[in-house]
Every structure is written in structure tokens, then in C-alpha cells.
Length: 260
Image (cartoon, rainbow, N blue to C red):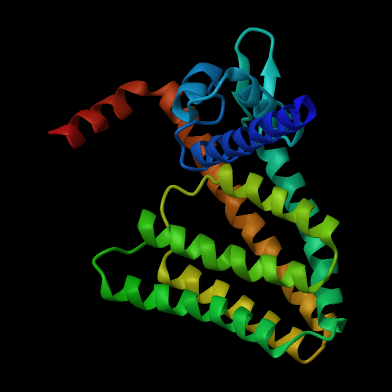
């Protein structure tokens, strides 16, 4: 009876650890735990109604995966990426996804897989239409979450079609890091959605035609364009932060005007 009880206890603890792992990821992705911010075990344990042990294990896993880091004075904190980190993440993503899409184009894929890719690509056009019919120039938070879901779905399915689980795991982790530490303050506009849809549609056509060379070229250009946009956003924020430090009075006055 004791071995069975121990096994059940270990399984329950693992389940709570997995819930804690996903909860912490979600809080980081939603900005509830900001880059550079400390992560406390106690409120997470209270939220899950558990002891601190599975929380600590989940934090350790996220430290190993690069989402969190241990600091001497503040304990566990959310990693804060710099410009070089963004470059390296995109270089890794490009190396693996370009290889994977080339392999996917050589695989005997199914009509169902191609239809799902098409559905993901078409959803971007649906979002663009909703944006153009609405009052805003960029996707709001709700529409941006829909965009992220269909964009992630498209790329994840291509990786699955390449039939290499290790590449899929590594790329998914890399994309999560890029997405969690996204610097985009506003959602995509109609022009950006059009450009992304065109890349997805052309990649789909190349994979369907089993044109590996074209598929890899398009994927490389797609990821490089995303990297350039992300770095431009980073540089803009760094410039704004420098101005804010040098001329805080102007930013304070702007905030006062907005609050009236």
C-alpha cells in the first residue's frame, strides 16, 4: 500500500508542478510578471492551493529554460533581454525553422495538413478585414491574441510536418521567449497583416509544390523581416528611455496632460 501511496503522491505533486509551470508562463506572457520583476513562491502557492515545493520545482524548470534567472539579492526574477539576446533568438529560430520547412517540403504530407495551414493563413485575412472595418488602426489586445494563435499554429504545424520532435521543442521554446519578451506596444496594422499573410501563403504554396529551395528562402526572409522589426522596436524603446532619463520633465508634463 505504501508504494502505491507514494506513487500517487508523486503524481499529484507533478501535476501541481505542471500547473505552476503553465501559470508562471502565462503571467509572464500577459505582463503580470514583467521582465526584471521578482517571482515570489508564496502567492503562487496560495493561488494554486499547494505547498511551495511544486512551485519551487516549476521555477527551477523555467530557470533552466531561460525564462527566469536566479539573482543573489532578489531571488528568482524574470529575465530581461537585451538587443543581442533578440538577435541570438532569431538566429536560432531561423537556423532551425529554415531547415525544418525544407524538410517538410520533401515529406509526403496529407491534404488535411495543407488545409489546416491554409486555414491558419486565411485567418490573418479575416483579422485584417475586422481591423479595416473597425475604429482602430492596429489590432487591439483581443485581436492580437487571435493573431498570435494563428501565427503560432501555422509555424508549429510546419515544424510538426518536418517530423523532428527535438527541433519542434527547441523552436517552440525560442518562439515563446520571443513572444513573451515582445516589445510591440501596439498590435499589427493592416499593412503588416498583409505582409505576414503573403509570406505564409507563399510558404504554403512552396511546401505544397514540394519546392524545398523556395520554401527555405521564403522562411528565411520571413524570419529576418520579423527580426528587423523587433530590433527597430527595441531601439525605439531604448531611445525613448534615454530621453526620459535625460529630460524627465517633458515626459512628466505629457503624462499630466493625458491624465486631464
